[in-house]
Figure (cartoon, rainbow, N blue to C red):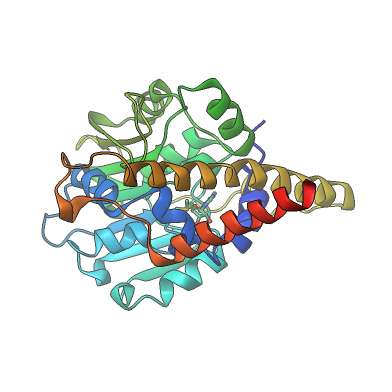
Length: 303
Ligand SMILES: C[S@@+](CC[C@H](N)C(=O)[O-])C[C@H]1O[C@@H](n2cnc3c(N)ncnc32)[C@H](O)[C@@H]1O
């Protein structure tokens, strides 16, 4: 079903999610240790490199990039002005270039970046293979692209809810998209937050190199295909319904994550060094307490 795997739907989803994305939602699913491990595949230490972060959102992934690459060499692209305004306000990201644009039709010349990075955005793209071909186009021959994204949940109930919300690709699909686009020397690593237990995979980081022998393509310009969709009343109503149901499915993962953290608090964590333990922040603790009070009130009212 994948109700929010569309540009307009994703736009409206982030119109509202951007308000509490950084403080409450994002740190439950995409943590600093996960990000820093995934970014290692991007080989960002090389001096003088130009990096583009696609689907950069509020700049959480970009904050990891600018720990290694000077902000003046980093370009952020996102289709959501609401997400981007949060990134623009972050002191660490001053000096980055911000462009509003579509991952499947990047407003960037061909062969212009040494590194392409995208984290947690591919799941909203209607045509992920096209987005990865765009990564290939904008990266210079010899440059690297790094895609970080979710994987299909192993649990059938989790998979059903996840797929109602957005795209959770199979691992083979990521590899196939990279190979079909022309990337070589693929490198992979897997990431998950500490509250996710079990052996199943959660998120993937896949990097590939554009061969030095790659031919130079012409710069592309936005095509009619990706021009902003004109919506009639029917399509608007359908979109509102899709965003509401898709968001509801997505939001079901929040209590699951909060409960995961509560469970962690009662289990032995001695195998994780103290400084590396992932914990709820104060905003999430307040959200957890408010949710608990609301649930108790609801139970009391229904009795
Ligand atoms: C989960 S957020 C990830 C943000 C950031 N990369 C991070 O690591 O926190 C996904 C972002 O992808 C953006 N996005 C979704 N579809 C897009 C598209 N077709 N083109 C550009 N950005 C897109 C959304 O606006 C949102 O900001």
